[in-house]
Length: 115
Image (cartoon, rainbow, N blue to C red; front, top):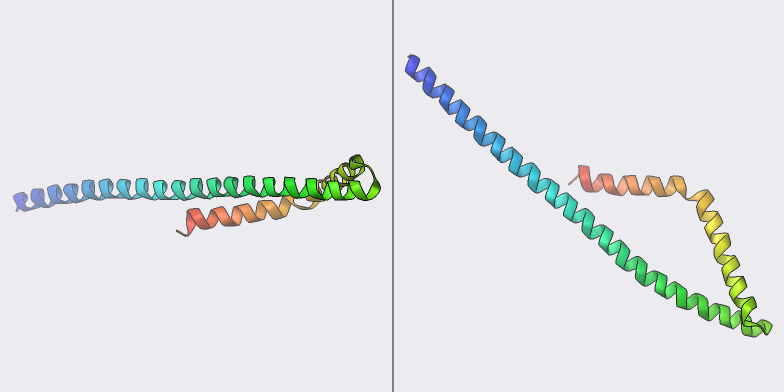
């Protein structure tokens, strides 16, 4: 009888060690998966953002030169475009903080908690 109990305790210990090992491996893989997805998302945003900035830069130069030619001085066109971007920056500064924070929290929580 005592021998049966000892075998059962040893079996429980073996199963517990196996469970802990498997759980550790699972969580390591889960963290790896989530961190990889996050890295890829950040890399994608940076790449697309850089391309969008280049596009915006050249479009802005084109608009500035068109405005400058219309007013007879290229400097005026550059100043108008810079003023436009200053207004956009001020509006973004004032109105986007809560919306941006909410969007980032919502998207990152989907990645980390629902996957």
